[in-house]
Image 1 (cartoon, rainbow over the protein chains, first blue to last red):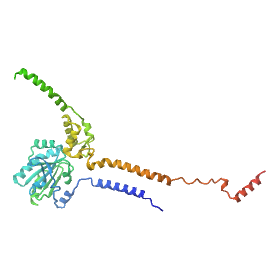
Image 2: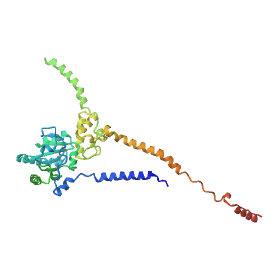
Image 3: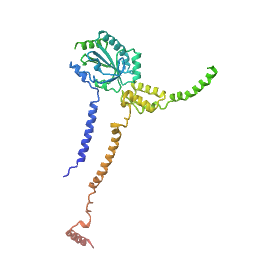
Image 4: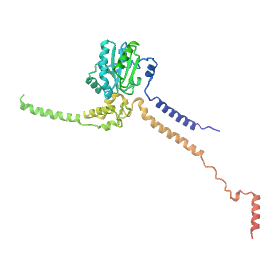
Length: 186
Length: 158
């Protein structure tokens, strides 16, 4: 009896398409690798630390990467002009920047997420933000941190390892102070 | 220069610059025309249907550019400069993106070709079986049965 290959091929192709769809759905969510590592007291290197991003303000260059601040504590804050919680958080970030500068321990680095660049510059000026800000126009840098909602804040130690994460608004000024203190210790 | 001499000069200057100013302020496209061509980059859905603060910001920016008299192409270029090509609802037909336009046509053509090859074969394989023999036909009885039938008919024949 001669076997007909076409039905088998059609079924295999259909199964492959379904498998691809399932894979896409399962892997659609943001990565939580950093969060899971911190829960196990494992501190991973900051993702995409070498990726250069366009500078918005307060850096004497047109583009910069995180490696610029190696050896310092970095409070990496993802924000956007249209995000009302980010507006609420901006004064805390500014106070933190003053404290970090005064102690010489590090800096806040703002990452403007998928924003109109002129609006982002207006935001920096209108809120009197003195810390450096870079721009993640296509969201690829944020994606490496599993960021899909704003604001999100990551505290990096001097070795550029992520030691604390706040997804959403920072729970309070004390949380950030403790996270920075921890980053200094580890 | 006297004031009298200045007046015609100023009037002429105003006349020369007026069309340019008017052209710059004349909208060359509409918000809806752009909305259907671009994505809300944060929500990752077409801007036309997006409802979010980010989408509102994008619309506001587009409206600002429209008010400045920029064309649809100029506005899309400005958006691409800020967000990359992901902001476009349809990718530009350059480089690898050409596949996006070619593949669907290629798939349809391949499907038609496969159908053109396979359909005649399937039709040949599904030829109707020969019609069943008519059970009542006299051709189907044996000679003995025919003889017996003839005999019976003769018996009943008056």
